[in-house]
Length: 181
Image (cartoon, rainbow, N blue to C red; front, side, top):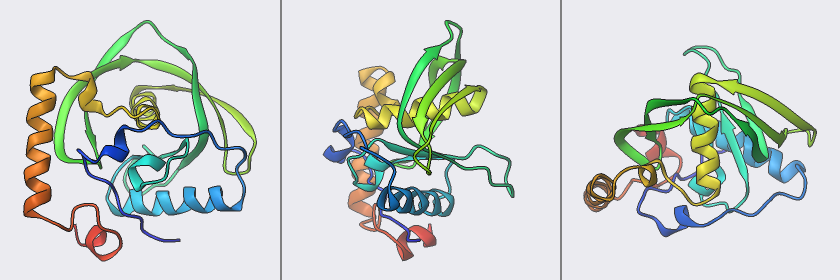
């Protein structure tokens, strides 16, 4: 497994729509494992392939308590049902370091996906897991959590990140730079 570079906004690659995976083969399974290692090292609770510069519809998520691991690996995740009830949650993102804001999303969802063994699965999720899955699926469609905010708030955050990237060229670098943060 390898640590991958995490793209930092406003990188234009984060705004592209990812392509579906034909099947979860050895290469896609390896990508999922590398993404999990990268996510844990960052540290984070979710990561989408576009965030590591791969335009494929692949996400990994793990919202289990610290010290425990219960990762989900999903290819071609699709929300097939969402509750009408919405819940605000303060979101952050590995591609928008140190930036947080409240986003309102459906409280419960059902998602269909291919797992790491290429099996079709459906999962009912609520709370933090539902929020995290929706956040990561947004990445697959070229959307960031700041796209749910007012243009004023979004532009403030993106300007801060541009300044951070100029001040710290290691942002978005793999391996030692990620592990050092």
